[in-house]
Image: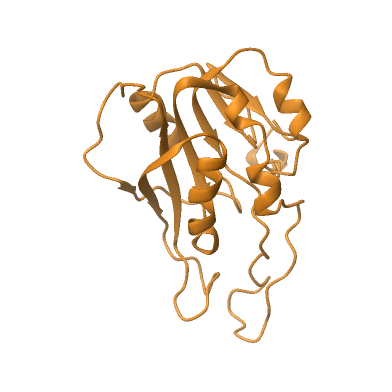
Length: 195
């Protein structure tokens, strides 16, 4: 089989999941990573046409209230870390979600992405995503990083870099849970319709 005949692989899209399924997971988790399907629109199909408008996403989204109502508090250990991916439009609400899940916000982390055409945003093109690091109780970190930003490459729309999970594993102890996961990862429990 040549590279010309290899099948094209598409990463699954995150979709809304039922909160009752989360309660079926066995055990409590010391570290939780969540990439909620925020209720937003996608960018224009043509990144070069300034008149083209944003379009609906190709996957289901959730409201802030639906995300906050997920039973994360019941699945988190008494002493735990939580990382919540967020976007510019929802940074303030992410702090509220963290508290609803039983965590105290600690540090805002940032993924600095190379610009990709006109992209999303109005006056300023949006080339970052943020992760809110939160704590519950007194879980000691395994290690320390010298910065709170990283310049990883981009993948398909909404896909997060694997390097982030590696950093989480170097800082926070398991057992690990990823919410709204797109794929499975060794030593992690994944939850979501596409994992």
